[in-house]
Image (cartoon, rainbow, N blue to C red; front, side):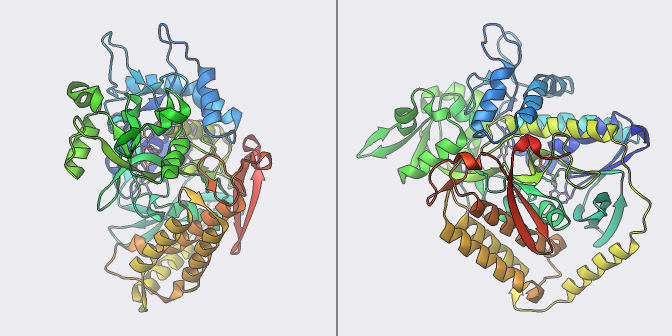
Length: 548
Ligand SMILES: Cc1cc2nc3c(=O)[nH]c(=O)nc-3n(C[C@H](O)[C@H](O)[C@H](O)COP(=O)(O)OP(=O)(O)OC[C@H]3O[C@@H](n4cnc5c(N)ncnc54)[C@H](O)[C@@H]3O)c2cc1C
């Protein structure tokens, strides 16, 4: 098949989905970009601090090789070298491309785009647009996508949620999608399907991310034969503030600009990160900082006051406003009381170097895919991975000779529709909202910064219980219907995360166990979890060996 005769369904329209759509359309492919909300409301717009790359800069000793080594080391040597080399080698081109599309990066006095330091970096290499980098990138990408929309190559579908993959004989032919406007399921066939649905935030209680990202698509595809990988590596961001609804991120930019962490002991400040790790202690990788905050057992504060009023309002305006709005806290005068929060998922859908899954013609990109970050992601590498993975998948689809087979999917649509109807008619003692809350309680209770066998086993038992009563759940027809049908996928995913965490009997990166405190050479590989008829199986693989 030539690229221009291919049709592509991309599910999720954040930064990775948008990039893949643009890259496919630029090769003449016909793209459907489906999501419940427009890109401007995706989690990607929350990205604050910046995007990593090494640009040639006079006097800077930084190199792409150093970016590669920092990324591998930050990920505790689990990520595959070939994947990370691809990511970091293309990073300068990614940032130049974003600039060419109109992303308004912050500049220095000479007019060059300005970088700052993020955690785990040997040299400052995070490029940013104030503290709203994600918003600026999404704006530029949406404009570019609209150009292709004008040419008839991209069609954006809103109010559209993933229901299930159209998968037969190890091959994907499209997806069943739920239309929120008509409250019905439709089949969309395509030569390739790209999953770009983000992380798994809604599985947890309060996080820094968006509840649009719940991991349902990964959970459902898992039951349809897709492997998941490294689910146990859940990133706790060290600095967040709690509000009634969610955790609000205090971007690493605050520490990149010089912010210092401390706690108080008998009226004296203890700069525990600097005491233990020296001058760059506040900018250690996130797994290390969160662990150290947890170990203090105290309220920890972040101090930026010494930067002064002008610098804070110029360089950290969103953080200034956020603290004012949610805490009535003037950070030019007062330290910020912070707390680690679930923030990012290193694990997700298992993909190979071309972002292909084990199912033919099915790809996964962005935060829902697991490949570059190993056991801990470095700040600024995720926006990069979202864009790079969108590019890689588009190239791979263009080069592939695969395509869908003409099939009649009407019986799958009828079955899905009748499942929806029977849920609407159900009457029972468990409400769906209650069970969803129980999932988050079980997962929060067993997958904190520190885990152990006992709490993981309890979590698995709790999830098993709710799986066993799934047919007794009162699905509320007045509710947003997606919350009803996605429940089983969430339960399956929650159990897969806990089993993965239980199977890794060591401490590494973001996976810290009180019963296995050492890092073990035998576990210096990725965890793959597979599903077959209700049975979950884990195995360990060397990262670069996964995929075709
Ligand atoms: C507060 C915050 C700040 C961050 N700051 C940075 C930073 O400075 N630098 C950095 O590198 N990274 C940062 N990150 C991480 C980074 O923003 C994300 O990893 C990245 O934007 C993810 O992009 P994505 O395209 O994979 O997913 P998302 O932007 O999350 O998009 C997911 C898309 O999938 C759709 N979707 C979800 N479920 C379904 C479904 N069932 N059916 C259909 N569609 C669905 C959503 O509606 C959305 O359109 C930050 C994250 C947060 C939460």
